[in-house]
Image (tube, rainbow, N blue to C red; front, top):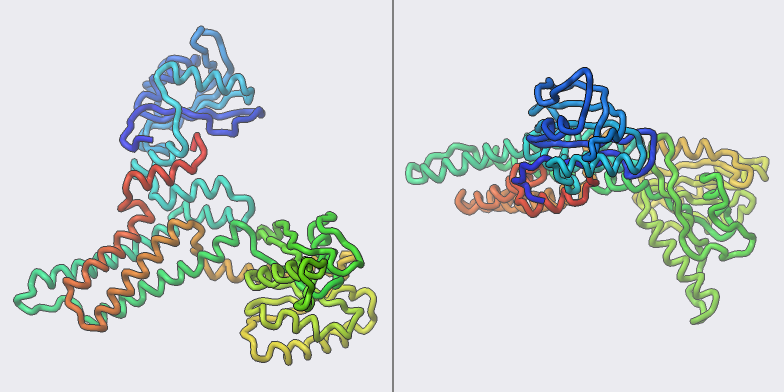
Amino acid sequence: MNCSDSATICALATPNAMGAIAVVRMSGPESLAIANKVFRSKTCEDLTSSEGYRTYYGTVNDNRNEILDQVLLSVYRAPHSYTGEDSVEISCHGSLYIQQELVQTLIENGARMAGPGEFSQRAFLNGKMDLAQAEAVAELISSGNRASHRLALSQMRGTFSGELSLMRSQLLELASLMELELDFAEEDVDFADKSRLQELLQALLNHIRRLCDSFRLGNVMKKGVPVAIAGLVNAGKSTLLNAFLGEERAIVSPVAGTTRDTIEDTLVIDGIPFRFIDTAGLRNLQHAVSGSQEQIEQMGVERSMETIRSSSIILLVIDASRPETFSESVQSVNDLVDDNIILVINKSDKISNIDVILSNIQVICRDCFANCRISNIYTCPVSAQEKTGIDELKTLLVNLIRPVMDENTTLLTNLRHFQALKKADESLSRVIEGLRAGLSNDLLAPDLREAIYHIGSITGEITPDDILGNIFSNFCIGK
């Protein structure tokens, strides 16, 4: 894709599939002239003289001058359009034949087929949005739940870009003061207090690190918060997964070791995607004979332990009908958990003294987790078999994640942004270390300029054409 190409482009803006309607989009200096060749309407005889924000009803003719379809044609005048150029959108019936013929007719009359993301790239190049906002358009299109939609919409509206712009302007001001001191080096003039300069840089560095730390949460908001369903064999883990999903996703059997590998599925609860992972039952099989069934089960246990360590939330399933296993159940995850854990007291319908059971388990937890860094331990009695207590457990999961989302108004979700901020972090860290060591400004300025470059590369203030091409090549055609 040529960034300097000013040709008029066209593409289907709706999915390439049959439907009630389809939209064909055209943008560029000849949009109205090309549309005028094929569009006929009693309310507008010459589209090239039309004002912007006007919609006309009429017909489009193919190159044989035969009516192809009855359509609605919307006119957008530069610079007040998505791309900042003269643009036309034609809403036609959703026949695959009509869609293909309409695009082909526009191409034969002077337009060319748009490349992936070329409309958004033109919007960026024409100053309608910065690069971070343009990338958010693609994320908004692919958002599959309320959480990812909210993140993408916030970024597209410029929340993240505003933070970056403020940081960059502050760094530019600091860099200007350093450069100014270099110009007056012979006069030995200080334009900035070094301790105050260090404080400002440290505050900016802390902000960058908070954004980088949010990348993990932002990523799980897109892919699903990982929730490991852990516990001893036959505690009811697979039954719990099936109860969550409302289908027989995992095989349930009284035979120990039925689940030998992790099974996962995603469920959206109150707009938040959760990725539930059913793990193999935890037990000690260290002395399993090589090549035996126990060794295969041990491999599943080891994989389960890895899953538990990497999950944001642990659902530790405890069989309420087997008090003799309470201590072993809690100890099985003692070295694996350092964050939120929910004790799911399963088969609670089979006992009458649930309060006593809960009290006993809480005492065991206090003793077992006394030296751990677990931030929160919650308890929720359920019956996975009877599907009771499941709604309460879902509410608890949402209540654990929702405050974290609300506290972090800006979350990184884009790997390119994360990598750029990490590089800015490294550069600013060198500047701060240099200030503490008493280095001169001419040694500090290059690292400061490098930090400014990396922050600017996120919004596109400093971005080579090859990077632009790579970014927009991942967009769908028509956007």
